[in-house]
Image 1 (cartoon, rainbow, N blue to C red):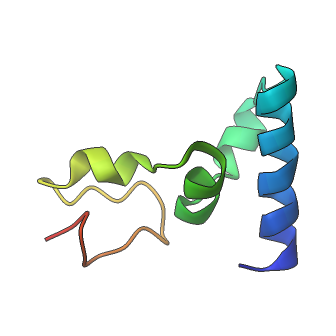
Image 2: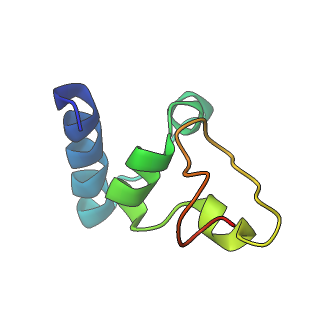
Image 3: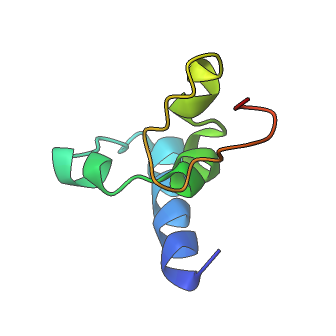
Length: 67
């Protein structure tokens, strides 16, 4: 994880804890698989295991969430 991603995740973790976690559409557009996992502990690709849907370019193509 690069420093920019770690800072982004830390910001949103703090926002979640303080109740100021209102993401804008721009913030949502900046999410990736890595940031989803860091902020929320899951990525929406995990719910799409059977279909192989990958909402972000960095979602895994193999492993526990994809066949």
